[in-house]
Image (tube, rainbow, N blue to C red):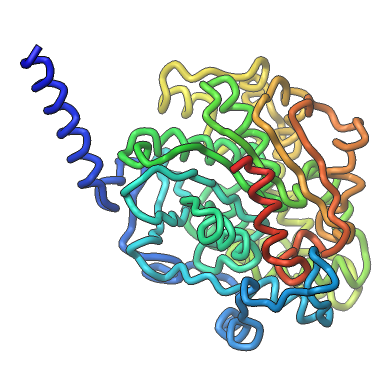
Length: 426
């Protein structure tokens, strides 16, 4: 009996010592490299206009937690001018510069594929929820602006650890990879890979539950991650989607119409995706992108998307790749065959007929004004029951104000935190 007690005590001491010695360096694996830098440090890969972020933070930087309470309204803050509402939502104060708590991470599933993330870890002392924050279009860990308020609420108010994953449309991803893609299947499989890789590290000892919060274009892939997770042990506790892109091809086609609005979006994409200009310079509408300002017909974006649509018929991380990385991996019925037999990027991302049987609770929040992801061809299709797929575990909530889920400059901070808390079931 005494010997058994000694053995138990030794094992307990060993486990406690191992946990106590966990640090950033101990988290790296051959396919997950923790860097010594945080956001906007070390190699910085951004595509915003020079000084845009520094100028924006100086003029519009603010802490919504310090906003005076609106005594006549428990939901909304004092209305802003439209320009201030937009810019204040982008420049919420959330310091992610300290490498003690925030570190960049490089995920390398295979030699020709790398995607970046930003860990936010309070400490290695106790278990906390781990929330994957999937950024929207152009979302970049060196900029981290449009979704910054969500990261702040998760980390500071809900005491969660976070892993911010940047968009495949980010300059960080495009400039780091010869093969490129965008959309739900690729991002969803990458998120699934990241979660599986984390299971190999000591960080798993400090995770009480796993969650995803996804925004806009990042929302599409969260459904793919949930689908893969469902048949591989179901580790995800909950998912929150803010203004998610559901139907990629239909939404993109609507954005390509003539007019001032689509042209402004096109010109903005020229700047944000400028590394693609050299890749596709032989295409007249890419080389002469500026002519869209003359005839009010988008040129750069439709041409680039048409080319990528033809090039990317299978995921960057293929079925064969994932089966090799994770022996014994299970696939939802028919989904692997869809990935193998896809004939274009748009076809690849029309995975909804295979979205079946997911039990993980998903909460969707939408806002009434959404020129980027029109509700009527995206989330509203789920609500009205006309979107292919099984959404029996989904909750849907229409918010009454704000544009494209820019909530920080419209809603009281406590209200935003509670939206996340309720949706994530924390």
